[in-house]
Length: 168
Image (cartoon, rainbow, N blue to C red; front, top):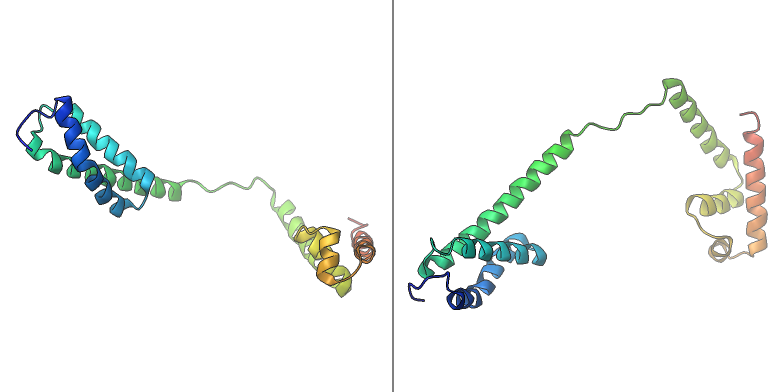
């Protein structure tokens, strides 16, 4: 490349054709993200165009690599700041009263005990349906029983759980 002015469109185009792939590969190996590498290379060539009067053609390669690398390092530094800020963000405040939280814990324990007291067949059907979200047909296939048997087990499980919680 000669010492022509990079501000000339033909020369800038030639610089782009000769260096864009090398600059892209350089920054891609640093960041590992094709979209980010595309953006950084594009920003570097925009800076080259905006500073074309100050950058001779012989220095264009070094300018592009330096600008691309610095832009990447700035993005990394910004990501660190965002991450540190997220760590310092206040945690969510629980507006529930201590009494409510205690009652909720007690209710949860009672529910766990009531589920544990169900017969194995009922408990299995109940947990598959209510916890794992399986449909009766899926449960029937898993347990190798009929859909009617699953319906009966669920009916019995719900009936027993209602009895446990009638007084609440």
